[in-house]
Length: 401
Image 1 (tube, rainbow, N blue to C red):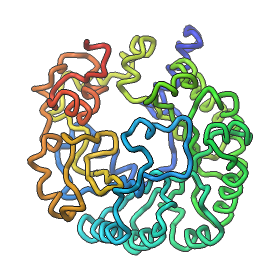
Image 2: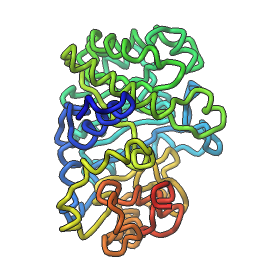
Image 3: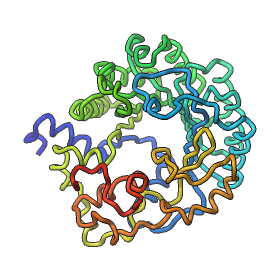
Image 4: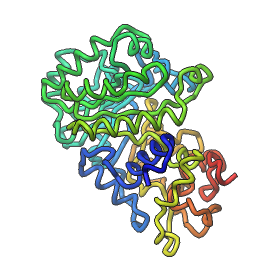
């Protein structure tokens, strides 16, 4: 079948096989955390968690860089940290996460998390309970002392430091990141690997670095980087349009990276799932191929509920506001404010929030669409924020409208 497809279709089929069938695995670094999410996301599971076990915590709004592709630029008061939690509030929040929620996984991001002077104190609190941490950083503020502390605190079997690296040569990386930092970042990656830390590299695909991404994968593999992730650039301001890639270019690069890993049998793990299911459905060429990936049994035995979560996750912003996830941030989606209430008090109110109701399949507006078992009507949170209705068709779906 593959030989009858055009190059454009082959690239998409390669991505769909990875996305839906795990051929090859998009990320073969399997953890208990991954497995828990996989079980919870099955349509026939109808329980909810007593407390969230996964947290995305933005430690600060501040950042020492102004990357050209950064999606935060569209936010009001972007990079302003005046309303961030104080050091004392952050330490109390960390303690409540482990004492009350007993979380087993926390992603620490920003802004740039290492701008927080007490980040190592926060890590101490989390690691005392053996909470797995995933730190997202540009690695420019990391020094030998911090690396030594991280090596003592973190467990490479469950903890990850993700470093942003957007080019193979200093010119392209520095052009994207806005400062002459390439050599320092690469040096810190090597030092952290030598210290025994699990280092992951994230590369955002743009027109500025497109021709370097395959060789960047090879260089990261040779350095001993454990995981290589590519992300698709989000257009959030008009200036982004000049260097965002087309779908064809994104699919082609992902296909090339998969083939490169397989042909050279590279040990580095890869995470390439950078398209959302709704973005796939909105691609005309992809949609013609999706029949092969629809669960035929699902239509005969539809799920009772179509929630995107089982109360297993929350997101905390730098100012202490709490949401279901980092992609759904608005006054309508707000769960609570840590500056005003404890996590226990905030969590006691979620049962009454629309995003924490069971979304019954029988009430879905698009329940008769053949793709509903793939997309689950898109992001429940985004639908609610835009339509105030958890059962609505996704406003982002071009197929339904």
